[in-house]
Length: 95
Image (cartoon, rainbow, N blue to C red; front, side, top):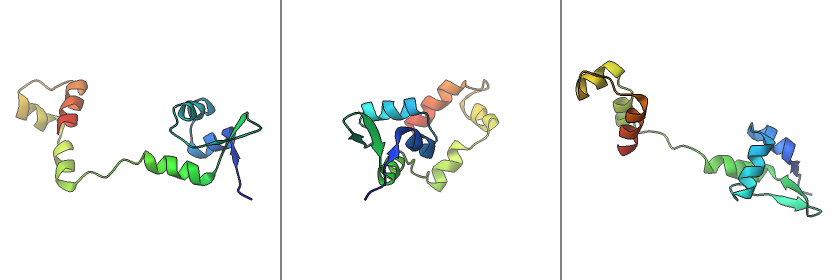
């Protein structure tokens, strides 16, 4: 028989709240089954699939060095005034 976890146990396993877990279920971002048509239950394999789907790929070495430049070197490159964090984020996303 396959072992199923309750929503509370699955949320604890993932390190998130049960509310966030149920939100992910409503958005169909995580697999689940129902018992008696009511309680959501989760397999450990499904939790692993969810974790794998949210994995962030590693950054290439060359581009990582570019993005880790000190704030002073960025401000010299783009003018004398340092940018605010929103502009930095927008620039990072464009690269």
